[in-house]
Image (cartoon, rainbow, N blue to C red; front, side, top):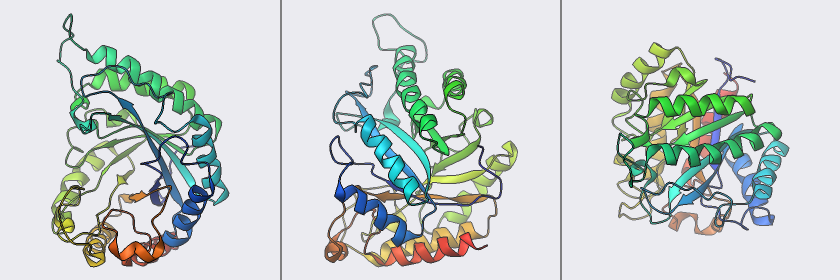
Length: 317
């Protein structure tokens, strides 16, 4: 099933910080139920990570802890479907040493005695195909083949080969989540069904960034949505929403300011087909502590009502 041009994705990303043993339980079940009810979502991106040791490591041991188990992944998909949510399965590679995955990088040419792109892509392909098969078996409507792997974006041949391999085992919609500001740097969008990116743009810069992205979308004639987009509820974060380490006081209004700006600008762009907002953890903080929470999650915060109102409006228009 391919994503239709007129289908709107009112989504929220669920579970990303989950570690093995934290998903298939009552807390996780309640979390997803509250996500659907609180935001009015019709989609969810079920996101989880496998860890390679460092940016120049070439082995991704996705079968090991702390990656959630296959059983937990299947449970989360089944839970989402029981709530009438469409599912994008989103396996992500991260670095165990804390380096952001965008910095995974190797020499442009394979060099003896050095870690190589060819070795990394062999491991990454095994990782992605494993979950593509699960996505097919469980009927996930979408599969994301990668997330914010900025330094790898230039490896067009390897990405085209990977996508071709994924299509042999998965028949649904395929996308790649490029990082913010990178939409016009990816040269292989034509190999995918949908263009998607991370929408962490300053609240006062949405118009300029949408102008830039629009040129990419129209040149490829593909559907587009923001696979990630969100803002911490923290003073100053609306101006730099991608900085999760920014110091500031908790502020629900700051988060709402970002969402008002993003929804307002995107509403005028018919080619923006939706969002997978970032994010909603499998284990929620207590509702009464929401005002003190300064992270991306919207639970119990002013932005939640804003999101539900917008998603409800989009579902009827």
